[in-house]
Image (tube, rainbow, N blue to C red; front, top):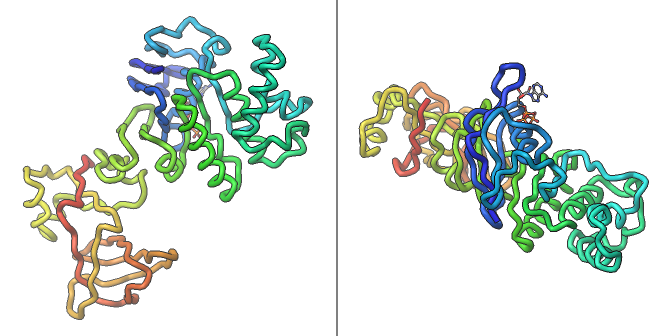
Length: 335
Ligand code: ATP
């Protein structure tokens, strides 16, 4: 099973919403489309689903171009942010809906519905109505409903974002487990970097209608290619090459190639080492406690850095500190 998005272009009223989008989702692959509001994530998902037509480009499933195939015939399972369940149907009827309209034999359908309710841990709610369920339970029903018809691909549009933090975290774990156990190719839209990192095999970082970078969560975190990706994937310290020439030329020398003026070194806060020492050339400006770690603001050679250190490290505002950066921890990004 493989899904390919080829050279997709979409404009609204002459304004590009998606430009030159190429992406492949392989069997069992969990791919997250990640980016800020308005970057085109939902538009891309809707085009894949067949709910919206592209201006050009194609969606190809197992070698077959789906351009002329309407949404309901694509065999995709779709889950939206709003649970969009049928309020007048029970949980079991909602989950079995796709099977019903495909005229699946009722004993087979009942068995499949029972299996899926078990997978999403809602067996005892089979005869309730959506209005009698919590948000998290309703979204589990929506996921079971999408899976009931053995979809070729699972498409998820911010399925967890309407839920509170605790339920979201639980459902995230369940969603990943279900997807793994069924091995179904999945494309999910999210603007939540942490969610993408936790769920995805590969993250597609989007910005203004284009793909900035595709990679595993760790690749995007450790080696962002652009300033946008560096900033979007968690906190980062961006140190311009022009500033490093005066402040820390050893980092430039260690890069092993010549660094252009427009480039910046991206260093994650936990990769910055601090050592309290009177007379050192950096000063602690602020500290916030996050449980297992402390975030420490440091003024160093006319620049403000953010470091993350173990919570128990004795350091206070006003301390003088040495700043240690291992050149191997620098990813070079184009500004
Ligand atoms: P969000 O996270 O806020 O949902 P998104 O990344 O999913 O954002 P899209 O909804 O795909 O973004 O929108 C991409 C761009 O296309 C935006 O600039 C949006 O205003 C525009 N757009 C989307 N749908 C339409 C439409 N039907 N008509 C005109 N412009 C649209």
